[in-house]
View 1: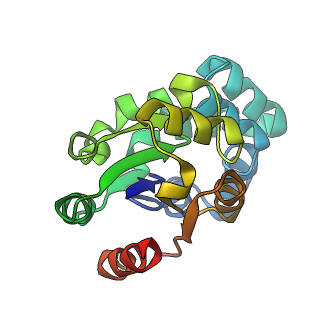
View 2 (view 1 turned 60 degrees about the vertical axis):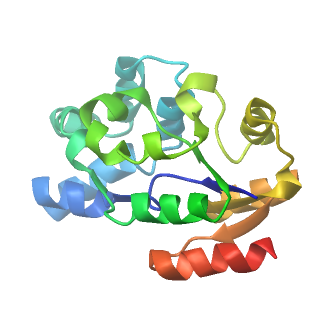
Length: 198
Protein backbone atom coordinates (compact mmCIF):
# COMPACT_ATOMS: atom_id res chain seq x y z
CA UNK A 1 0.00 0.00 0.00
CA UNK A 2 1.04 3.62 -0.56
CA UNK A 3 0.75 6.03 2.36
CA UNK A 4 0.70 9.74 1.45
CA UNK A 5 1.19 12.42 4.09
CA UNK A 6 0.50 16.11 4.12
CA UNK A 7 3.35 17.87 5.94
CA UNK A 8 2.18 21.06 7.69
CA UNK A 9 0.21 20.34 10.90
CA UNK A 10 0.61 16.58 10.31
CA UNK A 11 4.32 15.65 10.23
CA UNK A 12 5.37 19.16 11.30
CA UNK A 13 3.89 21.49 13.96
CA UNK A 14 2.74 24.77 12.40
CA UNK A 15 1.44 27.05 15.16
CA UNK A 16 0.77 30.33 13.37
CA UNK A 17 -1.17 31.93 16.24
CA UNK A 18 1.55 31.14 18.77
CA UNK A 19 4.20 32.42 16.37
CA UNK A 20 2.65 35.86 15.72
CA UNK A 21 1.33 36.08 19.29
CA UNK A 22 4.91 36.07 20.61
CA UNK A 23 5.89 38.99 18.38
CA UNK A 24 2.96 41.39 18.63
CA UNK A 25 0.07 42.53 20.81
CA UNK A 26 -3.26 40.91 19.98
CA UNK A 27 -4.73 43.63 17.69
CA UNK A 28 -1.50 43.73 15.67
CA UNK A 29 -1.23 39.93 15.57
CA UNK A 30 -4.85 39.72 14.37
CA UNK A 31 -4.17 42.29 11.62
CA UNK A 32 -1.03 40.46 10.46
CA UNK A 33 -2.93 37.16 10.49
CA UNK A 34 -5.76 38.64 8.39
CA UNK A 35 -3.27 40.09 5.93
CA UNK A 36 -1.16 36.92 5.62
CA UNK A 37 -2.31 33.56 6.96
CA UNK A 38 -6.06 34.14 6.41
CA UNK A 39 -5.48 35.74 3.03
CA UNK A 40 -6.36 33.63 -0.04
CA UNK A 41 -3.18 35.03 -1.62
CA UNK A 42 -1.14 32.88 0.83
CA UNK A 43 -1.65 30.03 -1.64
CA UNK A 44 0.45 32.02 -4.12
CA UNK A 45 3.51 31.06 -2.04
CA UNK A 46 2.65 27.39 -2.56
CA UNK A 47 1.97 27.81 -6.30
CA UNK A 48 5.29 29.68 -6.76
CA UNK A 49 4.07 31.66 -9.78
CA UNK A 50 4.85 35.04 -8.18
CA UNK A 51 7.95 36.29 -6.38
CA UNK A 52 7.94 36.50 -2.59
CA UNK A 53 8.02 40.31 -2.87
CA UNK A 54 4.96 40.34 -5.16
CA UNK A 55 3.06 38.24 -2.63
CA UNK A 56 4.19 40.40 0.29
CA UNK A 57 2.83 43.46 -1.54
CA UNK A 58 -0.55 41.74 -1.79
CA UNK A 59 -0.48 41.15 1.99
CA UNK A 60 0.53 44.75 2.68
CA UNK A 61 -2.32 46.01 0.48
CA UNK A 62 -4.76 44.33 2.92
CA UNK A 63 -3.24 46.01 6.01
CA UNK A 64 -1.11 48.97 4.83
CA UNK A 65 -0.50 50.18 8.39
CA UNK A 66 1.21 46.88 9.22
CA UNK A 67 3.84 46.79 6.47
CA UNK A 68 6.74 46.70 8.94
CA UNK A 69 5.10 43.91 10.97
CA UNK A 70 4.20 41.87 7.88
CA UNK A 71 7.77 42.05 6.59
CA UNK A 72 9.14 41.14 10.02
CA UNK A 73 6.79 38.15 10.22
CA UNK A 74 7.95 36.94 6.83
CA UNK A 75 11.61 37.41 7.78
CA UNK A 76 11.13 35.30 10.91
CA UNK A 77 8.91 32.66 9.33
CA UNK A 78 11.55 29.98 9.80
CA UNK A 79 10.76 29.85 13.51
CA UNK A 80 7.06 29.05 12.94
CA UNK A 81 7.27 25.35 11.96
CA UNK A 82 8.82 22.91 14.42
CA UNK A 83 9.73 19.26 13.88
CA UNK A 84 7.71 16.42 15.37
CA UNK A 85 10.02 13.89 16.97
CA UNK A 86 7.67 11.04 16.08
CA UNK A 87 7.62 11.61 12.32
CA UNK A 88 10.64 9.46 11.41
CA UNK A 89 9.66 6.51 13.66
CA UNK A 90 6.15 6.55 12.13
CA UNK A 91 7.54 6.55 8.58
CA UNK A 92 10.02 3.76 9.37
CA UNK A 93 7.29 1.70 11.03
CA UNK A 94 5.08 1.98 7.95
CA UNK A 95 7.96 1.12 5.63
CA UNK A 96 9.04 -1.88 7.68
CA UNK A 97 5.49 -3.21 7.28
CA UNK A 98 6.01 -3.16 3.50
CA UNK A 99 4.41 0.17 2.57
CA UNK A 100 5.71 2.96 0.37
CA UNK A 101 5.55 6.36 2.09
CA UNK A 102 5.23 9.69 0.23
CA UNK A 103 4.50 13.34 0.95
CA UNK A 104 2.11 15.66 -0.90
CA UNK A 105 2.35 19.17 0.45
CA UNK A 106 1.35 22.74 -0.27
CA UNK A 107 4.74 24.14 0.70
CA UNK A 108 6.91 27.02 -0.47
CA UNK A 109 10.59 27.17 -1.23
CA UNK A 110 11.48 30.05 1.10
CA UNK A 111 10.27 28.01 4.09
CA UNK A 112 12.45 25.08 3.03
CA UNK A 113 15.52 27.34 3.09
CA UNK A 114 14.81 29.08 6.41
CA UNK A 115 13.66 25.96 8.31
CA UNK A 116 15.35 22.95 6.66
CA UNK A 117 15.65 21.00 9.92
CA UNK A 118 11.88 20.46 10.21
CA UNK A 119 11.95 18.41 7.00
CA UNK A 120 14.54 15.94 8.29
CA UNK A 121 12.12 13.05 7.66
CA UNK A 122 12.16 13.57 3.87
CA UNK A 123 15.19 11.27 3.23
CA UNK A 124 13.33 8.47 5.04
CA UNK A 125 10.43 8.63 2.56
CA UNK A 126 10.10 7.10 -0.89
CA UNK A 127 9.45 10.45 -2.53
CA UNK A 128 6.74 13.03 -2.89
CA UNK A 129 5.59 16.28 -4.44
CA UNK A 130 5.90 19.85 -3.17
CA UNK A 131 3.39 22.28 -4.69
CA UNK A 132 6.01 24.97 -5.29
CA UNK A 133 7.92 22.75 -7.74
CA UNK A 134 4.89 21.74 -9.85
CA UNK A 135 2.87 25.00 -9.57
CA UNK A 136 -0.27 23.14 -8.51
CA UNK A 137 -1.88 22.99 -5.06
CA UNK A 138 -4.24 20.77 -3.11
CA UNK A 139 -7.18 20.24 -3.25
CA UNK A 140 -6.98 20.44 -7.07
CA UNK A 141 -6.96 17.07 -8.80
CA UNK A 142 -3.89 18.01 -10.86
CA UNK A 143 -1.42 17.70 -7.97
CA UNK A 144 -2.84 14.33 -6.88
CA UNK A 145 -2.50 13.10 -10.47
CA UNK A 146 1.10 14.35 -10.65
CA UNK A 147 2.00 12.32 -7.55
CA UNK A 148 0.35 9.13 -8.83
CA UNK A 149 1.91 9.42 -12.29
CA UNK A 150 5.36 10.18 -10.88
CA UNK A 151 5.41 7.06 -8.69
CA UNK A 152 3.19 4.76 -10.75
CA UNK A 153 0.32 3.93 -8.41
CA UNK A 154 -3.45 4.32 -8.53
CA UNK A 155 -5.30 6.49 -5.99
CA UNK A 156 -7.31 3.43 -4.93
CA UNK A 157 -4.01 1.83 -3.82
CA UNK A 158 -3.18 4.72 -1.48
CA UNK A 159 -4.17 6.25 1.85
CA UNK A 160 -3.96 10.05 2.06
CA UNK A 161 -3.61 11.84 5.42
CA UNK A 162 -4.23 15.60 5.77
CA UNK A 163 -5.43 18.04 8.44
CA UNK A 164 -7.51 20.04 5.91
CA UNK A 165 -11.08 18.85 5.29
CA UNK A 166 -10.98 20.57 1.90
CA UNK A 167 -7.89 18.59 0.87
CA UNK A 168 -9.44 15.36 2.15
CA UNK A 169 -12.48 15.96 -0.07
CA UNK A 170 -10.17 16.63 -3.03
CA UNK A 171 -8.34 13.36 -2.42
CA UNK A 172 -11.60 11.41 -2.07
CA UNK A 173 -12.81 12.84 -5.39
CA UNK A 174 -9.64 11.45 -6.99
CA UNK A 175 -10.26 7.99 -5.52
CA UNK A 176 -7.92 7.94 -2.50
CA UNK A 177 -8.76 6.36 0.82
CA UNK A 178 -8.42 9.15 3.36
CA UNK A 179 -7.77 9.95 7.01
CA UNK A 180 -8.63 13.42 8.31
CA UNK A 181 -5.85 14.16 10.79
CA UNK A 182 -7.11 16.02 13.85
CA UNK A 183 -4.07 15.85 16.10
CA UNK A 184 -4.18 12.20 17.18
CA UNK A 185 -0.89 10.74 18.44
CA UNK A 186 1.18 8.82 15.91
CA UNK A 187 0.50 5.40 17.45
CA UNK A 188 -3.23 5.98 16.99
CA UNK A 189 -2.62 7.29 13.48
CA UNK A 190 -0.61 4.18 12.60
CA UNK A 191 -3.50 2.00 13.79
CA UNK A 192 -5.94 4.04 11.66
CA UNK A 193 -3.73 3.64 8.59
CA UNK A 194 -3.47 -0.12 9.10
CA UNK A 195 -7.23 -0.38 9.63
CA UNK A 196 -8.14 1.57 6.49
CA UNK A 197 -5.76 -0.48 4.34
CA UNK A 198 -7.63 -3.73 5.06
